[in-house]
Image (cartoon, rainbow, N blue to C red; front, side, top):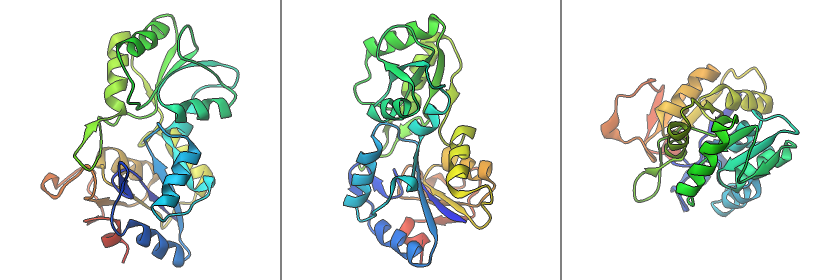
Length: 247
């Protein structure tokens, strides 16, 4: 069994820690619970995530973290070429799998993820590669990304632009889709009895819990607010934040 925790909106908002979350993780670990962090944000490299978790008071090992960049990399075969329309986390995950990465030209796959420097030229490079025969892989399709000042466009918004320009349907790697579920099962084991998914977005975290066959605990510290309730899928628990959930 494990507690499968989202990061953005559960542990932090952008660079601001959510109060009490680190103590909540410590309480879970003190009970002997396995805690796995699963993020749809593909932009950062693994070491950056580990350092950020350390800064907010949650020391982890690399095996405690699963990202949508890693899930997307499983959809590209070693030896293939991928055009990266994403942040450095995607480039890192693809290279770790033995995939050649480029930013322009022909490719076997175009991998799209959230990144702040997306522009028209990047859109053009990605669309042209797909029109030339590359398949389209999205790290996630989240329309927005939570910040302390409210939601901003997420990886799904960038992916939608590329898919529209190229006229294709993407394959999605991150929550709630099968590639991410397979990575979680590989880390935790196929027997997830007693496990819980905790997240702030029913359309990803909630459906991910459904895909894994475990309960969904919704926290209102990220995208979803009290005024948005009720939501589907219906969570088994609703709490203001992780600290309120883990008592």
